[in-house]
Length: 134
Length: 134
Image 1: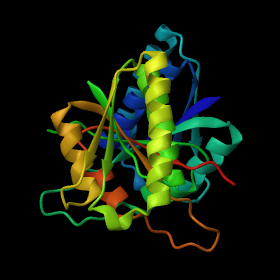
Image 2: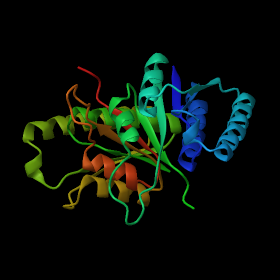
Image 3: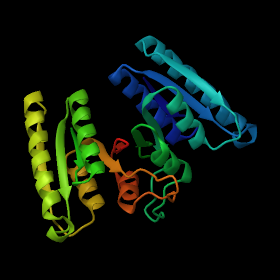
Image 4: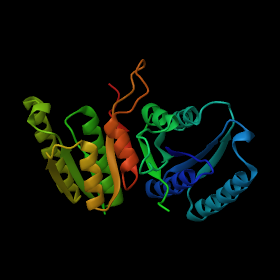
């Protein structure tokens, strides 16, 4: 059994990763971190460096806490939703964790298509978290 | 701290309630069960009787397991999403649990408006579960 989390270098991605690590500890489950992107152009080098740095910290923290984990960097030219659902199926995930953007006060009532796809197609429960308010 | 679950007498509602009870045990949290509806006409008497019966079983099971809980039946003429978010705020919820319908193979990729509102407006993480496949 595993917990699968989609990680991207945004504040929502970081919130998802933190929540997923907490769930892995709570449930004594293996954590599978998926960084899915279509290629280099969507990610600038500064964000990429921050991502690598944070992932290093997460790895170290998970190591220290004895949480079994792996990181998969997927660049398969498909939507992140497809990668996440597939890995959840492959690893018999008990939970998928995703980050959601906060609705702005005047924001439209619409979830991103990736979030909707994951919620609807996931083979297991999905935990949706938001970034802490600034 | 509490876990808030929206319960209606559907298979998705039952799945949400079961998942929420499991989370309450796991997190040693108080469970707040919200049955929100606009009035009697949306609920036929057979479903209502099943709901009462199941809720009785849930109450008994939670009692047996020592999970602190309460059931609130809200008929305030507002959308269930509004009731859930409000109770989550009032009870400093650490988690909201909701049931989602399964996407049919030819189904449109759209989440219900209540689910979207809860996901976007919740003051805490939201766990979305589906009913077991038939």
